[in-house]
Length: 404
Image (cartoon, rainbow, N blue to C red; front, side, top):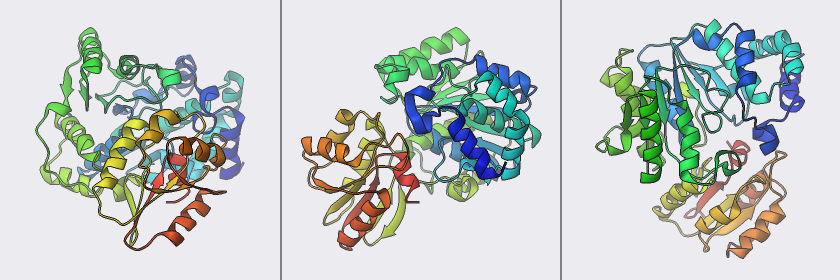
């Protein structure tokens, strides 16, 4: 099979959460354990750092990876979802996994995948771990796909666990209270392995403390640390919180790796070029000022929308699309009524019909027009916006993927 045929098979053979939602989610690690045994346990052949959380996982993982890279280490990075190309999920020192490795891995193991009905995510985790082991990385930063306790990545024994924050997202799977969601994320806390908590509330802190006590795991709350003065190329306001988490993690990792001050600074300065991270308060234009951001739940969107209001502009244009399982009642009230909206549907099966989004948005006083595609919505926003205006594109990772 060609690379396209291989990835098409991966996407279509079995349900995938990124594309289909609930039907792809498996609350079980038995398949992943079976796969690891089949692959001769690659997860045990490299050092790792495990990163979970509702928001900020990708940014935090990328910053840690970039710093370790600047320190001279061979660094694997596993993240999800991808924006353009599946290979974005699996990198070493910023370079994407080769098409040939993906093709060969699937060809060699296809019969096993089919016989055991492995999910897209389980296959992808196996691919990443096999790649990192065979390429002999010094360390791999592994981002949780969803939750933590039952996520396929949770078969590693890391040097360090990191939980960025807790918010309401994927409540159908993880629970409808912060404590329930925190319980799922806390599942990555392992015996005698330190854990960094980025942000907490009273309701979630007790969950983390209880789990850390059970596991005898040293626990650190980055939120309580002094404000940081480091500069970072990632510009969103929310990155200041992620940065405190990263610096606490790096401080703990100094027992395992040699990391100098200038390497931390360079790592933060070069995150994008070192890791290929896109879509986090990414500035696309300055006249009109145009930003896209992958924030898609109430916690993340509130921070992004608050940051927009800190800018000076004549009018705000919002290109907005979401997936069909999004809790619109929780996110639409966050958006300003005095903006012009361009409603669209991201080009994935889970994309919510733009007409439905527009009608629901109207109930919250958000007025605009419906467009047939993300690109058409963005083109019209650019045509109608003045140089002194602000254009924001977001609501879903998939919307941003069609723009960057």
